[in-house]
Length: 73
Image (cartoon, rainbow, N blue to C red):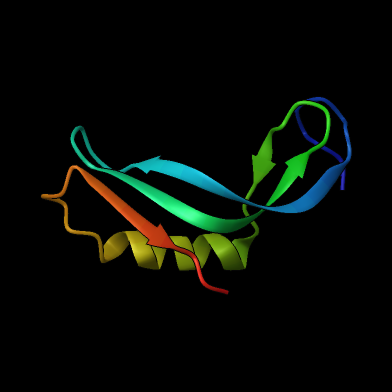
């Protein structure tokens, strides 16, 4: 797969990513499988991964300032 930003090669990696849910709530997902460009580090989430991420985000306590979750495949 080619990167839509720079045309570099995308590869599967596991990384930690932050998601800002509101003005005061940030969620860090650990061990998240993504496709990442070798050249520019742009990343993509596959549809099945994004579906699971959305389900996880819907369960987060919106009153919390910081939540750290592990994405378990």
